[in-house]
Length: 351
Image (cartoon, rainbow, N blue to C red):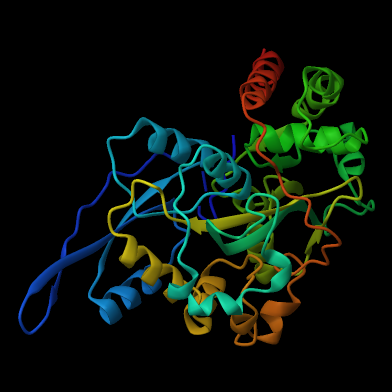
C-alpha cells in the first residue's frame, strides 16, 4: 500500500466529495467552470486553492484519498469524474500503461521550465508526456539523539532488540518489505515470490520490535516521547527537526528511495483547460513556495527554491544529499502478495 499523507496528517478515510460550481462571467455569455481535484489528504494548501479561484474564477472541488492504490481503484471503478489527480510515481506508471492518463499540452504549461531537469523524464514517465512533478521526498530514519547514543546509520542499526518498543514506522506494507530487500542486497522493485520468501524472516523480526505503525503522523509519537526512533516520510522528519534539533535524519546506508508525487489529467477528465491552468499555477515560483512552507518536502521547482529561507534549504530532511533517484516502480499483481505477507506477519506478532 502506498500511502503518504504529508504531514498531517497521510494515509485516513476518503473524504466525501464537495461539488462547487463557479460562474465565469463574460460580457456576452456566462460559462460555468470548475476543477475536480482528487489528491492526497492535506497536501494542497488551502491558500493555494483560494488563490487559484480568486485569480481564475475557477472553483475547486477537492476530494482526498489516503493511498495511491485507493485513488487508482476509484478511477478504475468509475462513477466519478476527476479533472486532476496526484498519483505517486509507481501508480502513475501503472496508469500510463493502462491508458488512464491524458497527454499534457506543454504549450499550456509555460512554467514547466521551473522544474529541475533531473526530476523530468524519470522511469514512470520517460517521455514526460503525462505527468508533472509536484513534490519529492524520501523515507528515512529519525533518531532522538538525546535518548539514543548509539550511531544509527541504517536498518540493521535501527531494528535491534535494544530498541524494542521504541520505534515508529510508516504503516505501508511495500515500504517495509522494500527495506528488508535492500538490507539483503536485493532490488527493492523485484517483488518475486523468491525475494518475498527471503525478506519474510527479516520483516517478521522487525515487526515485533515496532511500537507504533502510523502513516498519518508518525512524527507525533516521536514528539510526544512515546518512541525514540522512527522510519518516516522526510516531510515529517523536517517538521521534527524544525521543532527540536535533537532529532536527526538519516538516509539508510543499505539503500533508500526517493518518491515523486505528481499532477496528471485522467482520460475521463471533462475540464481539461481548468486542469492545465491549475498545473501551471502550481508551477509558479510564488505558489510553489507556499506548498514548501506548509509541507517541507523536496521542492523540484528551482525557481521556487530561490524564494525559500536559508533555514528551509538547510533542513537535512527536506533537502538530503541524494546520490540517485531510484524510485519505486509499478509491481502489478505482486502488490497483493506484499500486502498479504505483511498483514500475516502483523497478525502473528499480535498473538
